[in-house]
Length: 587
Image 1 (cartoon, rainbow, N blue to C red):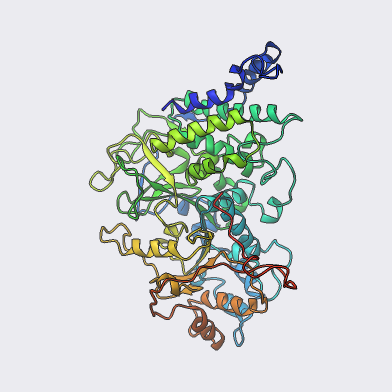
Image 2: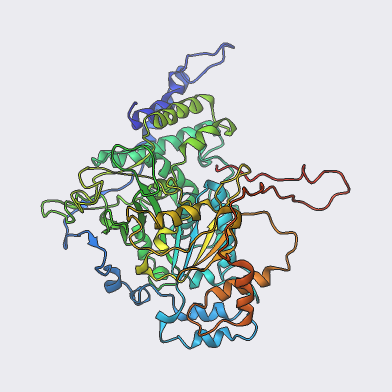
């Protein structure tokens, strides 16, 4: 396969190699009057590139073995020192609109104002699924956010986001998490304002890029030139580049509200936000899977890596360690940075990390015909994507490998200079539960927002939960003692499971219910499952658990297809069958 950079250059210059005239005698880009475009592209390639800067280390970083407290528990602001607990005022505000008969939620939370360890620890997980997952997850986060108008009314969920400790995402869910934090902990309301040229401006395809001028064609050329220029900065610094570098830069234009998609934005810079330092919002985590050397398929026992604002690494026993994220790109060896090496900063580019978790190239290739871009660009993109698929090169190349010669007895990556990472859902765990079920994090309840496409109509059916449960039982020991609720077979999948210390609230994407009066009963169940520290459950909670939790029985019959009817009742104009909807595909 041609080098990725050469392939992108070919895409950029394909028009310039066209014949001087087409069959109708009209001037084309090869004509001398268009040679200025070559100069135009060359000038664009001198613009700001991704900055990866080596510098001397005052204190050489090391790989942190699990069991050693993370440095942020000792050095970061007080809001995160107490094991990342939320300030009690968020809990008090949230409990103010809780509705459980015979239970005073405000008084209950108030008892623990000076003992934050007794408050429930909440995790929110947003699944993968491309733009579908982005939008469905955004709807849930909007409902959970106290900044959303009406969300703090009695019986509503506003404040759950601020009360949570962790917010994890992968693929499209990772885009949502990144959008919120890389734009100064913004709200979904702000992101969906619809302003052209801002973050979440989806008027134009990711293949078209943003609007710069009145010429669509020149806009596309400028966009691809900027992508190439930014990635060239990384390559010029001596680092390997892959298709994920270009993909990450393209995502940045859609999800980071900054000039040229913020090429200097890093994931570790989230930790510098004053609101985040003061624990106003949960810790954001993005997931990716490791692809073992010499393997093409991602199995259920693949090593799961996470990116949080301070560290990159894994709880899995294959490595069982974390490296300071801001020094990713430095040449670690056997868990330390040799004195002869520089500390590198800037490798943890925010777009690159979002791109790492969402390698959806094959899905995009299938939908190229629906995109309004010139044919020659489509042709070049197809060549690139086909070559990637043929050679299984749709990975993110983390080179140098931060875990080189580390955990040599267990790590499949200890002997390789490059750490290949892929889409976080390729192991079947499309909901990013892995970081939330680790005993060290003491999560009491997880809200799992599932936008997977498991059925023929592209609705979720719980397969991701089954995959995580099966991994917890894997005889290889890859789960490392993590506790996960027993999961029923798919026909019995229901709202929540509570057969272990961690309660699971499964929120699958589905059609809007015809009857809306049930939301208060559902809210009551939600609030009940937060009360893991309560001495007894009120009768209302018992009722909700009985109605919605899995009762332990098994039914292995094949479930019927989920094909709901939608829309207002009609006078026979359309049959119910014709009104059925099909969930949108992944892209």
